[in-house]
Length: 200
Image (cartoon, rainbow, N blue to C red; front, side):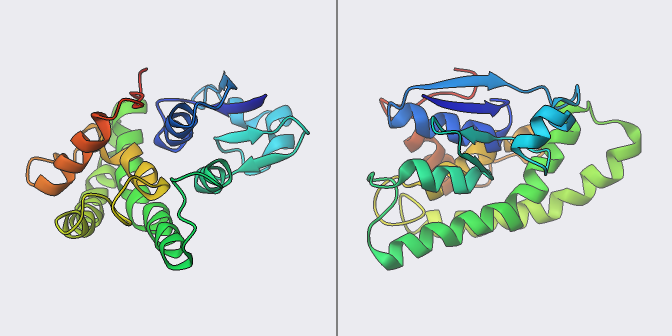
């Protein structure tokens, strides 16, 4: 059985949990408390020297880290990772966008606010993340104004990657009222019969 080390309130971990649920893959979820320093123990560092979650431990003892790498591994052979070479590259394009242009702003602002309680000594950093976050949301809005999903005509792991932090963006100060296409996309995902909420 697969074993996942993570915090389901983290978007990077939740995206894994959501895909596992959609694919009906049995797994064991092991909660890791990042605020208590559990990713910095010697035991955890043996799995991931980078001290970050999520971590996927396979039955044969092999380990995978980095959320989008794990998504690609789990989705292989399913409808959520296109076989077409160009579409697959587009999935990767959006996943790189998520990690470099979206997550550093939206997820970091959310972490400062939700996890740390917006301490005064990080308020300036929190406010500095707003412009970049809205820039990323605008890129998504443009694409989703033209198509129901980010790649092709159906849900892929590109959508799962970006949905994870986008649907809770308000927790980092990013209100989505002005992003009509994004809100419709969120509704589209959440209306699926195989949807699992972050708190589910």
